[in-house]
Image 1 (cartoon, one colour):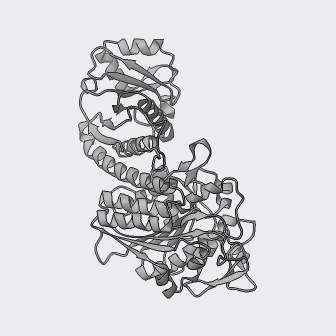
Image 2: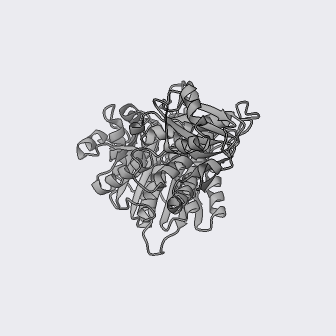
Image 3: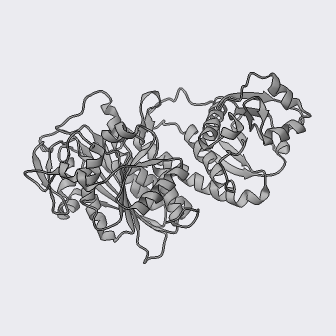
Amino acid sequence: MVKFRIKTGDLAKQKTPCILIGIFEGRKLSEPAKALDEATGGRLGELVKKADLSGEVGSTLMLYDLPGLACERVLLVGCGKRKELGREPFRKALGAAVAVLQQGQAGAALCALPRPADDTDDRYSMTRDIVTTAADKVYRYTKTKSEDKKAPKTPLQRLDIWIDEAKLEPSATTALLHGQAIAAGIALARELGNLPGNVCTPTYLAEQALALGERYEPLTTEILEEADMAELRMGSLLSVASGSRQPAKLILMHYSGGNPQDKPLVLVGKGLTFDSGGISIKPAPEMDEMKFDMCGGAAVIGTLLAACEIGLPLNLIGVVPASENLPGGAANKPGDIVTSMSGQTIEILNTDAEGRLILCDALTYSERFDPELVIDLATLTGACVIALGRHASGLFTSDDRLADEIIAAGQAAADRVWRMPLWEDYQQQLDSNFADMANVGGREAGAVTAACFLARYTKAYRWAHLDIAGTAWLSGKDKGATGRPVGLLTQLLLARAGLIGGGH
């Protein structure tokens, strides 16, 4: 993982293999670039005028051995139009620069890119974005590869962040610490998500949670086995695992960072380590991507890691129901009726709507913690992908204040959500002639009726549901887990802890 440091002082005198500076469209120099140009006696400006570099966002050009500078290289990075350099273009420009560094021989660099035009704080957001963006770009999955043929020969190992005013260093240092913790949580969530289903089983997922509990003193991990769940009458959760040889696990992670009397915040993550659809089997194309169906659980574990790294002064509980969903002689069948821990009965019309079946028992179990609030996150419905695509997670809650809080956290973390309806009008779609409810509500508003199903198990506390089916992983040539929404959740927790602005 890349290491980061904050640097201040004369930019021209910084000894580093490479300095990243921004160039705007029209070959206009950013303020840091102007400082370097002056130190080189105008040589930098002359080269920029001659260079084939338009300044378009993400364009790059490497320069070597400029006079008057202590650095070995200068990487010019296109930042577009000055007035249009917002957060997303900034992250795109930095990502392009990191890609160049990964291909070169520098191994380390100093980032002196210009501030985004919409950055009005004291460098906190910008610094944290540099850390999380760079960490995201250097992440590589290698666990099950005998050889990584595309591995960089000289990978980026350190990225220093230059701050032009020493008085802003404390804020930047805080941002660096928070950013590194978030990046570590995202990396863990991505790694767990990317592992194949024959490696990352419910047992493996439980072992990783136990390992974190041994690593961090404030964190205690407990695993409920199938016998424990049967005693609790979690008939819905256990029914999903009945077709698999892999035993289900209920992972409980207790983080004690606040006062003992403080109510905990509970995060519940769907941990389907592989979802074939069961008897209602999925089409073969892209079924391999159903190893990502545990990304909600992975994000909960990643967020607990981030909380430990930061030392959040809160009490948190992570709940991850983990299972496989496979066809088998004992598997759920369409038309079967199971009894959830709450005592409510469910007619299973589609065995591929299994995520809500494991979540409902986990949500009922969460009542015993007398929580401040509960947020569940799940790769729950393809319908949410159709509705929102890959850019925003779906947010469902009847609590307007909580919705505003989550939306603000997503915006601040560049991990956005979009609020969807959770109206009583949709509940009738779950009516069943044979049970208290059906597990699906038909083709219309599939993401909404899934959330309505979960809402029936959350009446005892404040609750929100995040459908991350469209954001938890990417398909195609960039196939892989994204680690979302670790950034959003950590941002929410930081704000609630009063460590940054935007608290509840």
